[in-house]
Amino acid sequence: MLYFIAKMASILRRKRPVTSFFLDLPKNSPFASESFLRKPSQNPHPLTPSTSYLNNNRVQFIRPFSTKSTAKFPEYQMPSVTWAVIQGRKEKLVSRVIICDYLKGIGIIPEELEDLELPSTVEVMRERVEFLQKLGLTIDDINEYPLMLGCSVRKNIIPVLGYLEKIGIQRPKLGEFVKNYPQCLHASVVVELVPVIKFLRGLDVEKQDIGYVLMKYPELLGFKLEGTMSTSVAYLVSIGVHPRDIGPMVTQYPYVLGMRVGTMIKPLVDYLVSLGLPKKILARMFEKRAYLLGYDLEDTVKPNVECLISFGIRQEALASVIAQYPQILGLPLKAKLSSQQYFFNLKLKVDPDGFARVIEKMPQIVSLNQHVIMKPVEFLLGRAVPAEDVAKMIVKCPQLVALQVGLMKNSYYFFKSEMGRPLKELVEFPEYFTYSLESRIKPRFQRLQSKGISCSLAWFLNCSDQRFEERLHGHYIEAESAGPSFFMGGKLELPGNEIVSEEEDESDDEILYRRTVSL
Image 1 (cartoon, helix red, strand yellow):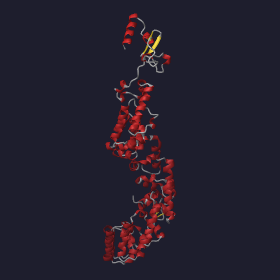
Image 2 (image 1 turned 180 degrees about the vertical axis):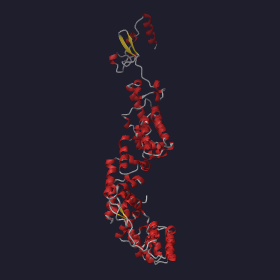
Image 3 (image 1 turned 60 degrees about the vertical axis):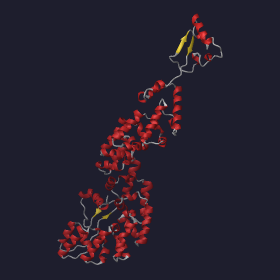
Image 4 (image 1 turned 180 degrees about the horizontal axis):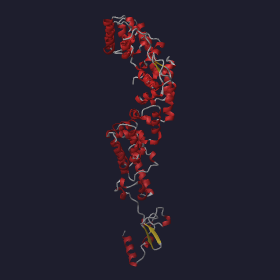
């Protein structure tokens, strides 16, 4: 050490160039190594302001880069476009290695981040991970979509979450929302999110329902307004869905906005129309049960229709069955029909053909609990009605098996005590139990008594109030007629109305819907 001090003092006294000090050093001195003294052509590092020009020998003092000067700047004050200026190539690689080691250490697989620009320091990455964990995301959730680590907390995550909370997604559910749709963190609030919300409001989705809709189907935020969403809405309106019902449909089943018309919606509509269902009926069905649009045509709808036919349902009755119970298109139908057919045959003595007629008249029976079905049956058997007659009554009026036993008791006691009619009339007209005792049976029976009219149960019960008054004031008792019938692809034909004016054409489907569908 004393040697170096003396040598430097000698150089300064003789006014020699300072570089001669390094040139005269012993070869074994660490200051004489190539890593310390190097000419520019041999220096692999870019030129920096620290390069000095001394005499004709250009000496570069290597100053290691440091990130300390940038660490004091918060991330949101250091745009990513400046990283290449602040950090050199070597230092960026070192930072990436450090960050990847940190991610591996906490269980995050960084392979998918190879093409992603990472923050300059591991502290910034740690901040992102901890922020996501505070939202409720786990390491496994982050591994499902590690690209979320490329989002700045201040420039991306906080603005997006703030807007989501503003439109109705509760703060405790924000983590669940991000878990289901992490791509939202990359979105621009003004350019991408706001237009989607305005579009939903334009469809009459209530403001308080926006959060519910997005929680159910968060991918809506990634759709283009001029794409699938607009075309699906336009097609539904074209088949008869009322524009004001689009909002409630979207609220109930927002997935409809993500369905392609050409591959999902239109093929389903065309197939149902081919079965005999008018488009107006389909429109009413979709308005009340938008989830019907989500039934897969090839995997669910067509196999279920074929299953109905295989169990004896007539082709011309398919439209009526679907109109009465649209959910039948999406049920595990084969298993349900097999179970109910076996039950009806074993317990109720209804053969397979009779079971098919029951399904045609009341398809909801495929989902009715067998314990519920047995209660009305046991009531009838307990009133000395033979099992064969009970089976006939069920085939003729399947609604019997869904009635409350208490109401059946009241109607039966009135029939026996007040009306004094034979049990045979109940077997012939089991629909008697489906009418209200207080609002229809009693008042009309009393009117008949006051007029001294004797007639069948069907004559005074199976008609409207207006028709009943006409019958009371008639000069003769007209023959009984059958109820309304449904023809595939045609109109509703009411008995006695052979001629239907053209002005009524538009309302026929509505009449059919009201009579055959209980939504």
